[in-house]
Picture 1 (tube, rainbow, N blue to C red):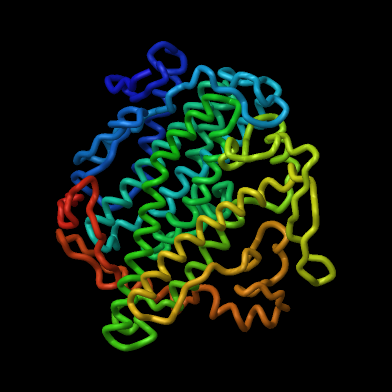
Picture 2 (cartoon, rainbow, N blue to C red):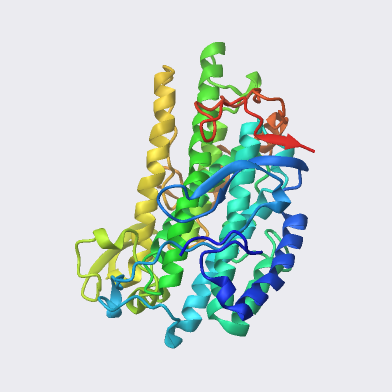
Length: 470
């Protein structure tokens, strides 16, 4: 079905054919607009050069142009339906994918959708003040692009809640706007989405590490036997790629500028010369990576095992797995802490699916670190960045409640306290990074701590007028 852009809510789900659902969503629309005005990007603009989803096909799915942000067309888009799609795993393997909600899985599916939906507005709230310190108009434009697409992803989840979960779904949709990132009374569901994003180094780290977690969570939901959820997440993944691009290239450019300053001034510390020192970059990396690992949950989970068996949530790239896609007789090794020592123990593979997903995420994150180290190598520098051990600074899972060094050693409390200032951002580090966050709104100019991008957006040059400020 082609997208209907004449409707009040752009969509390709035939909303005009379901007047009750249409009225419900149109009543939610002004609440969303109020939330965006109060909790969305604060910096006033006349317009921003944005990508807007207009279809879901392989070609021509997005339109670029200058848009007044409050008038951005947030739409509801599901990937094209495959009439022959079948469930690829669990006890329903081989059955036709469900077009309607299976009653026995109603509560579990609602929970999965709510948790995913809660992350979308949370990141907008976390990033709402970053526009005031944007290092260039190019970067400011990318911030807005990430934010409006997180808003569209919220619409996607709200559509599912309204369309398939009745009164309970409408209440959950309202709660997605009631909760706010960092609120003492109504915080977001997942811890990483209550952390501050106070500066652009944090933003690049967030879009590299935390949005990458989102990629893998969406990838597992794309496998769902509930076809509307699967198709929703498939299209969201298309947009999510740009968010990770922002993080990957943002960190490329941060490391590149740091390396330039180190070479130019023949120093190991770019900090006094208007850059961000590699030691500080490493600390921020350690923090954001460890917080993002917590989003994968504990090493074992009976809930996740049940979701898989029921056909609700699969594995990353399920169709590429060479097993029976049931896992009832398989085992897997997971981390444990026993008698003060790190070890591994075998558990039922179904209960270890969090670890399976996390392992793919870790390998993906490592590819970015390799990119950044290549930049250092090409600059002739011996220093290297590294992912810390996956037990470092964890609040969830086997390593919660113990201290692990970045190189994977168990520590006592005193050792942790002595080492922490060298491993995680200190108040001094944060103050230095904040001091560099001076806005640059002139076309073709960029902040001193960041290298310009290799290419602009959609074929435009770096010095294009990506944003017109109010």
